[in-house]
Image (tube, rainbow, N blue to C red; front, side, top):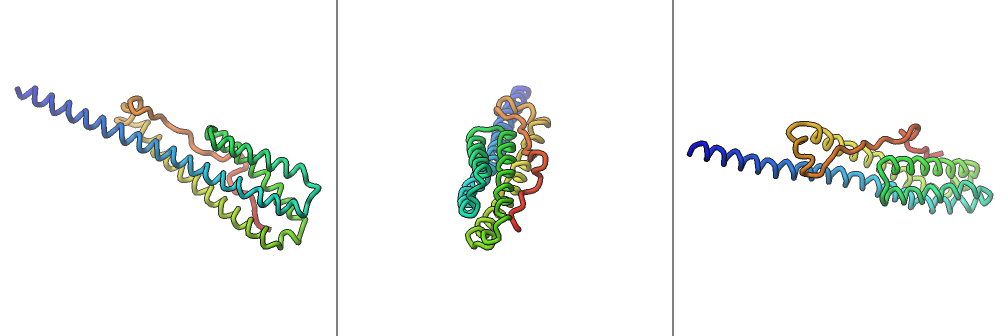
Length: 186
């Protein structure tokens, strides 16, 4: 009789721990997924600022058509990556947009009246703020991934990853040369 009671208690404890482990892994995975969404939000915000910046610069530099086309293509790439791209797709799209922003700002460098424009300065400030938010979102995502990865690679959580449908995620590594935001001040 005692063995039956012990077996029931052990089975109940195992069942409760399984439920706890499942829920813990799912919560941490959802947190990592949400953090990746935060990067998408900030990249989309930056992409939405770009048309205003481009239109402001266009008024001064009509002959820089190639730069503006590159910005449009980079912006479309960010939108596509934000919808259903992998972490690497998002980083690559971000790198292209960074280059496009740098090109637009290089064009603006040649126009002192533009640099003094209140509208241009305001857009630069918003862009700088967005760059800071992107850096924070990347770090937040990487922190969430580190927590998730440490769980799914250690016992006892490792034993429940299949049941929870959770696996390790990739860290968000900015592409080479993209470890600092583009310069947005003159």
